[in-house]
Structures are given as structure tokens and as C-alpha cells.
Length: 66
Image (cartoon, rainbow, N blue to C red):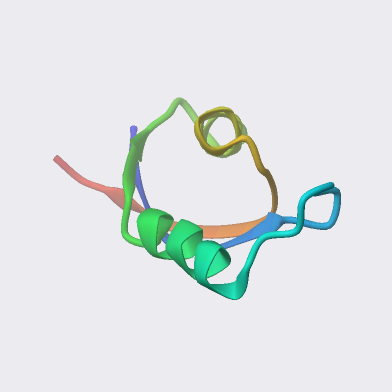
């Protein structure tokens, strides 16, 4: 299935080297609207976490129909 990310919140709390506001904005800008191939919501979260290196606090998405 394909999922398009409409809203996402990353967990930056555990970062030992705090990000700037500009870096955080760039991370969000890179992922809002992104289309990800995944089996289900759990796999979607795992895929994004693997790519970004950040845990996800919350996520909203829509299913993309082919």
C-alpha cells in the first residue's frame, strides 16, 4: 500500500545535539506530503523511522489509490 504523510510529529527529545529550528523545519518539510510504500501503519512508522533516524510521536496519512 502507499501512504501519503499529511501530518507527522517526530521525537527530538532524546537528541544529544539539539537541532536548530531551521533544521527541524527542514525535516518536517521533507516528510509532509511524502509517499511511502508500506504494508500497514506499523510498517509505515518503521520505514520512516529507519530513513530519518527519529522516532515518531504521531502520524496522520491518507491511503494513495493507484
